Length: 381
Image (cartoon, rainbow, N blue to C red):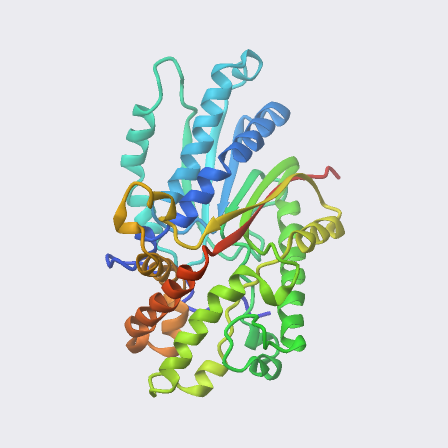
């Protein structure tokens, strides 16, 4: 099976430009802050139930930027605060081992270069009398659709904004069927049922594989917290991602008419992701018979990552500005894939037009992503 770790252009946009992921990941940051209470509960449950001397925590799809260490900081703080207020747990010494996982194209060096500053800042942020547990941070390149750890060696898995990605490019599953999607780049109103089935079947295979792998790697009673893009609408052709990428496809088609994009290139491009419904996710977990669902919810987050600042800052208040914010966010994630397939020559013009299209859309409605939060406990056995 051809995994997505193979293409060298599959990673978030890196470098020092304004379009890089580190500068355009506020949407992901908001999700981390929103799910922190669920994370705190999972960490406390592992600490109190398993009492590990060395708690192994893995962040799958860690990427780069402040968000990577925001998660690490949250776990360290929860453990420190929990031990400070619990005499039973405090009697047992505990260390933390973090593994930050992503595909080999991820800029791990950027993460490592920030560790010294991170260590000083987290020590300074805690009040006197609260002792931080010793912690160690390592990088682990590889696909989370493969085995990453020895059997029963991890206490807590975390993944945020990752599991919407598929393990294979759609054209590599069935190239002939994938071409039937025409100039669509994701599931759209005009997407044939055979292409929809490709996406749905691949989601089911990937989710089943992911759960199987993590069950092997988790200690009995270990936990997973997974946050990923899904859809609220049961109609697979009417999901949030369908609307978002229909606008990107529209921008690509406008370049096609001017000769900046080749028709064959556009017809062969289908984004390797899928936003499942809550029912699809629940069915996948239950069919695995490997995990119990501790917590499951869906929350909505605006396309524009700065929409919550609009009341206090007029620079973020117009639909046109919102369109630019969304375009930068999408470019930071999808630029390497688009550049690898279509070339870099058209990117600036593509996202200029995309920002305009999104701005017009936002003038009509306040569009939102659907985000699924799933906390799982490994069934013993």
